[in-house]
Image 1 (cartoon, rainbow, N blue to C red):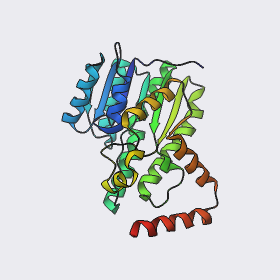
Image 2 (cartoon, helix red, strand yellow):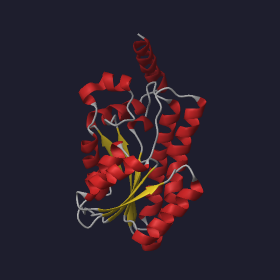
Image 3 (cartoon, rainbow, N blue to C red):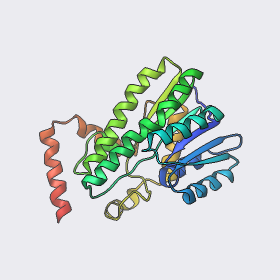
Length: 255
């Protein structure tokens, strides 16, 4: 199997967590990174860590929910660097959803992906090559009581990415849908962190798994493997059966 090497990379949501870890994983001599985020200070921290690994780094402080701002900034960056890898990683999650947080989840996780890829995708098509990574979640397959808007947004990303892969393959562009379980990042709330303990995946390990999948143009990257198989199995079962598991989980959580 052919493995790609990436020299010009765009990563959204690079300020912290999985995005920061993936930025460091992809950094190296001769690599040019454009890191996108909303927090200038944290973004610069990520950038400096990547520079110590030999990468040339630019930071781009934008809000990806702003379509016009995102299109302008990223199309200009692509004109300068001709990205061969774009990872749409930026996302939000809220343990307790409100109407406001649900709307922000959809704006960021769904519209943010579209805003990121719109012009970038056109540039890759014109060049006839490139790789796209879309960060979804194991929650995209079946959710046992998790935040509805988050799960729905990640399911959208998964289906969109799989459809996009089929459409862009004939144009020489690969698409990988990334479906991690719980990664040890600031997005994990304290209740989940307490419940999972050492079962949380280290961000550095997750980044390494993602890089390998992107390099071989894997259609889907899921981890940890055990949780991936379990959630896939649950998704194949009748809803009436999995509903019982949801209610059991809900009662256990209340206790």
